[in-house]
Image (cartoon, rainbow, N blue to C red; front, top):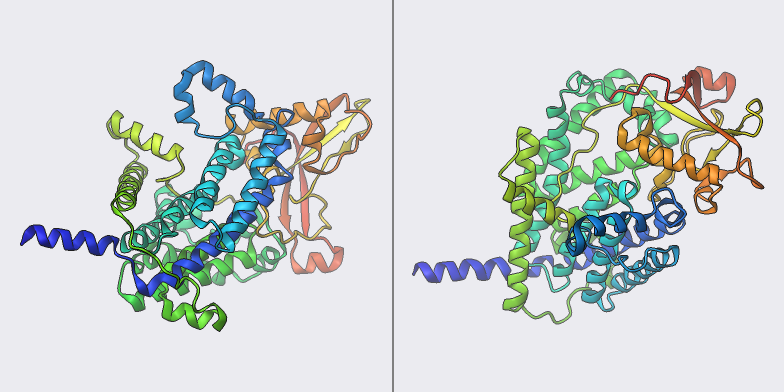
Length: 489
């Protein structure tokens, strides 16, 4: 009797859920769009970031890794560029990612496309180094990994794994704010600073910054509510799951209205789809799509079910391990750490912590060049704040990696200064690939003899100041970087 019950349990766990077939079909199509955006956004940046003449050439990383670890480096840095990390190879991988995204979008070769999308983005994830180390990159990887199995249909086990992924991303974001001890979060003042100090604000941030302080405090409370309490509704009965999806989607739309956070908020909305069953999805989709995902689907065989089970258990084990270490600030035995690190190097089981600390000031760096040491001209970036009269632009879902990374440099941490020095070195060399990342190169014929970096404190103007001057920002000169106080946090 006990054996029969166990067998029935495992059958239910991997049995396809007919009430979620349209939801699963829609999630995969939307995931394909996110993949497409992520690959397309990288195409014009990749050579300048990590190509042979870029800021951090990936071929050098591979050479060092192989000399240090030998063939084991292939397992520690899983990617397709071991034999060729040229600009052509990197851009070809991105174009291939766009093609497979379209194939998955139009439900052609879906299983193969899902596999290739994961492999290609995992390769670029490692190749990108610090420029692809963002949490939405790892979130996309794990969502895409689960998508490989979801193509065969939504089993209860897969639905639970997607729910676990969404829960981790949301709950850990709230937990990290509490664990950080940041006074802006504990004092409910974070949103009084966030809109003007976030990496790449857009015009909606300026307007949100003008809200009264009581509304900012209410926003902090709502943030804690959506990140610490709402995630638990994900695992509850239907009406609570729907409530969790609606509240989470509403929060993501608020963030999009006030922030440029690449595609992450759109991806979180996509992950909410499996909280909604087909009855709800049919109300949202046009009638001609109601039969999508209704084709003949065979129950997964023993091998596929076994792979899904093992992969899922590994994700749960590693993510719980990472969550425990993050929450307790402690370490587990070395074998456990090795398994966790190896699994995360393959794109799954990561921890997430969005804005655990809040910056209360904004340092903007202006890079200048000169041939005589007297007359200096500015290099201009495409998206980060520059001229105080220019309104901050809305660029979702594009992710300008260099502009975003410039936000971290004022912390003056070793890792940030290392890549920033490499960036300056390539500017002095006049690397065309790196200069293509900028909006304006004041030295088109020959690189300058000298470079310097000026630091400014940037603040949003008040409505009265903007009415008088027309400026969106006000800036105050701080000094020559890095001989200014580091930004904290």
